[in-house]
Picture 1: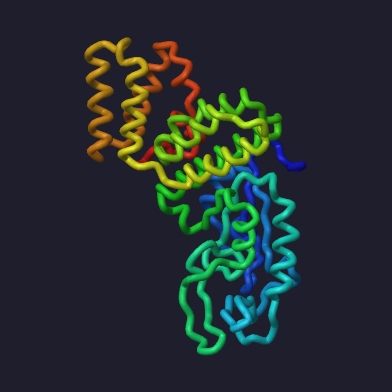
Picture 2: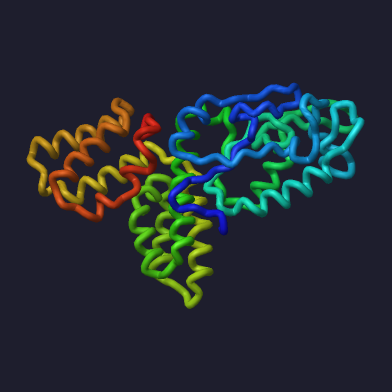
Length: 318
């Protein structure tokens, strides 16, 4: 991770989403959310695989075609084949991107799409939305735990918040690795992420706890195994049931210091959140308020209470 910068969260992005005129028709697919909102907290590394392999703009469209020999990336009229060029570029370029904490790709693109990319049958010409862009397929193969999301899916509140949470968590891990992982630092990292992990996946949370309680003689191997399961856990969006469980756990840490009225207020806010009558931000805000009154360092350090900057206006809208 020679280019990793702990002070800057760097994520890859399809260049067209930043307004660069690199598409087949000479246009772009500028994402206002990426350009105006996410740019406040992320530093972008733009890539256009199609331009990078020498295709011009404007240019003939290309498509994924399932041939008997395998998946190919062909011109719509089959006048040229850029499969090998795209594969070679993808592997070379992606191998240099290990410092990234996430990646946003352009939906539907035969090079960059993450899901439901149209795939044509080379014999019949019929198509189905079942493919992954060739570049993105390589990206996910080389970095299977890298948070990757499509621009269109960022309109979904749950998917958006989950992606951004994973990007910040991935950056925190890379920072830990950059500083040099020790058994002590790994335990401290896990301690800070306990409640966030519990909100996302209870079984993985318990297994991760066993990892940090039973280190082997190989800290690097332990750390890699921890990281893989850590990112797998966060791939599961947090649920209302799990959030409620976490909130009740947190309440237990200082409920004996609350007045009867405060305790009732927090208990009711958690119950109403669980019933879908209040957003999660309400009990979270109450807990933050009480943390200002009581010295509870264990809870105050929990990433769960601040998984991403409040400026993004994401915090628990569901």
